[in-house]
Image (tube, rainbow, N blue to C red):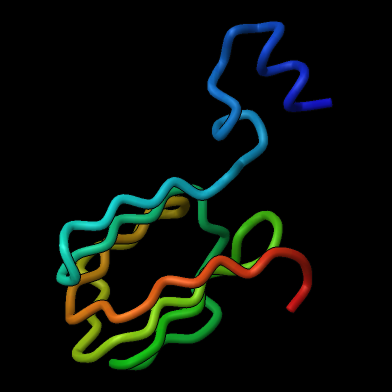
Length: 88
């Protein structure tokens, strides 16, 4: 229903259905919008809760440089970004 509503109202679908928006600069910086909280954080792994599923970021020397209720900015050597749908 939200996807159909987004089309009818002319709004971006990612905003209406709360999909994550991810911007990555090389393997050194990552910006994620529409997360629902940090599940786990170490210098080599970050798990973010999403509205559906989770985002798993692995690497080395990871650091959270900024975090807001729905946005997070990560720096370090980013090796992998995985989007896991559903309840994992």
